[in-house]
Image (tube, rainbow, N blue to C red; front, side):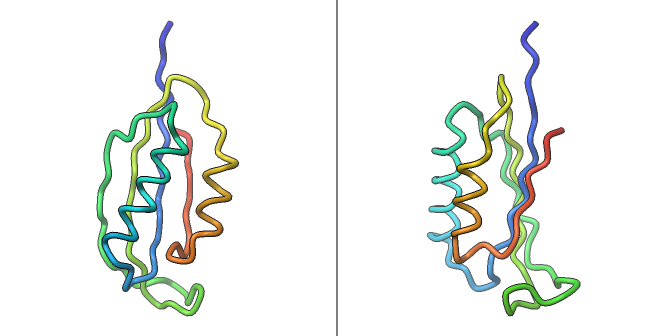
Length: 95
């Protein structure tokens, strides 16, 4: 039985992040998630945050859908996103 595992990754960028920076982050994520396929990338737009995060009152929201044949090791992804200065917050959910 070949069942696929789906992950939903939400990334919130600093509002004035340049497009080349977001593309670099997504490219690095694809490299880290080499065993998975990036199925969908949705730009949800600039949204007001409920509270200020890292000095920002707004965030640029993106949602990624990632599909894999096996459970992914997300340690490197978490480390990368925690260290990336253009990322305010992120959330990875296994569906």
